[in-house]
Length: 260
Ligand SMILES: C[S@@+](CC[C@H](N)C(=O)[O-])C[C@H]1O[C@@H](n2cnc3c(N)ncnc32)[C@H](O)[C@@H]1O
Image (cartoon, rainbow, N blue to C red):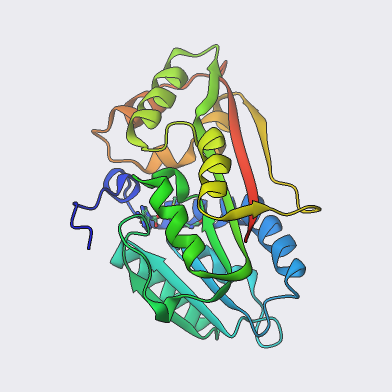
C-alpha cells in the first residue's frame, strides 16, 4: 500500500463555500455535461450502467441525471476530501440516485473490486490536481470494464497564456505553481495510451484555446476559482488586481478514451 502523504492542492487552497459550489456547478454544466452526455449516448445511456465519478467534489454530476428513467444503476463517488464527498452523497441521495461513496486518492492506490467494472469513469476538473497522473490513469483504467469509457474534462494551466495585465500573469503563475500536472495536454494522451486506453474513432478528444477578455471574463469566469482561495494566498492577492485590460487564453481539454 502507498503510504505517501496525500497532497490536495484544491482543498488546501480553497474556501469550500457556497459561492465556490455554485461556480463548480456552472463550470460542470458548461464544460463537462455536454461531453458526459455524448459519452453516455455512446454506451446506450446511463440506465442500467455503473458510473464512477473520480474527484466528485460538490457532486455537480448529479445534475446530469433525471430520475427515474435516465439514472445509472449505481453512481459511485470518489474524492480525497470527506467533507466534499458527504455533500455530493447527500445531493445524489436527494435526487433519488443509488449511490456509494469512497474516500481516497485515486493516484495512491488501485480501487477495491467493489468499485470496479464501471461502464464509465468520469474525471471532471480533477486530473490537473493529481500528484501522480500516471498512477491515477492506471487506477481509473483498472476500474473500467473492457470497452468502458474514461471521460476527462479539464484545463491545462501550464499551456495557458496571459496578456496585457501583469496581475493576470502573476495569478496564472501562482496557479501553475500549485498544481502538480505541468503539461496536462501533452501528458494525458501519452499516459492514457500507456495505461491501456485508446481514443475512440468518431468521439474526438480535443484541446482548444478559449479566450477571455476584460476584468469580468478573466477574473470571474476564467479564474473564478482563485477568488475562493484563502486571502493570504499569492494567487488570490494577484487575482484581486486583475485589470480591465486583461486577456487570458485558457487551454481547455475534453478527452474520451476506451479501455482496450
Ligand atoms: C476542482 S474540484 C472538481 C469537482 C467536480 N469533479 C466537478 O467537476 O465539479 C477537484 C476535486 O478533486 C478532488 N481531488 C483532488 N485530488 C484528488 C485525488 N488525488 N484523488 C481523488 N480526488 C482528488 C478534490 O478534493 C476536489 O473535490
